[in-house]
Image (tube, rainbow over all chains, first blue to last red):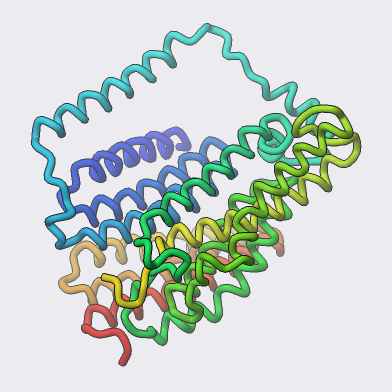
Length: 311
Length: 92
């Protein structure tokens, strides 16, 4: 019964993925891609990877989907900005994509017989960190350098989006305008949902130490609430030159780096935690990261700054 | 007894999901499709949640109820927004 469900889910994923690739209309392709992300998060649940599943649903499907909807909406009907690729180019891209897929599949089959897993040593040493969730343990204790770089990448992405602004608009208000006028029903949602989402986001971040959740998931929920408020027009996005905003953006990486360098003093290595202080330091990092992730994701969706009269 | 209730309620919910999906695919016009979709959101999910509640502890049941209420809120509002944009024009 369960195997049947898994096979059906895998087949559905393949079909929906294929549909998203061959869809003629760009908006159709984007919407099918969002559905694909939600199905993929179901697949992660079936693999008992709840943390990955939450991230896939929130980032892979939600935030990325919204970015692509906005992009597809912007270029729709604007033939000058849509590059028409020749058939040969499509075939070439398909051939290369297939080669990569076959290569990865082949590698999976020629791996050495005994798969080496670090799961057992991780679980053995996990109680030393004071954390109960092995995923949080790997992210903040065993592979914290990777996690730090991930957050810096988010920062770079935001700078990339801001770089699209015209010189005259630099430092101004992001040009997110989905509705021309205030929408009374949407305003209602933007006033009722954020209090619930806010509490839920804090819970998700806090609970991430012991059960699935954490800074990324909590930050995404916070970002979603902020985006809802901005889209409904209840609050305008802030100017990107605002100092509190800049501070919120760098808070996560700065706290992360500060605690990382603190490691040189006490245990004597970068990103090492002093004996007995691992849990409070990790919670401090997660709190700062949640704020930064929420603000960065919200600003990524809000787009580059744009003057009132700009097209 | 509780099991029988679960089977009946979840089956009824699943039938509504099926009917709503068929309606979404077959009904003419966006407003009629929305009409089919809202039944699934409200009653279909409500019946599934109601049916599963006796199988859980109090806390899990309360969580599922909260999920249903949130879907009610967002579903009703999204439907309103879609319907208004179909009728042309934002504020009315």
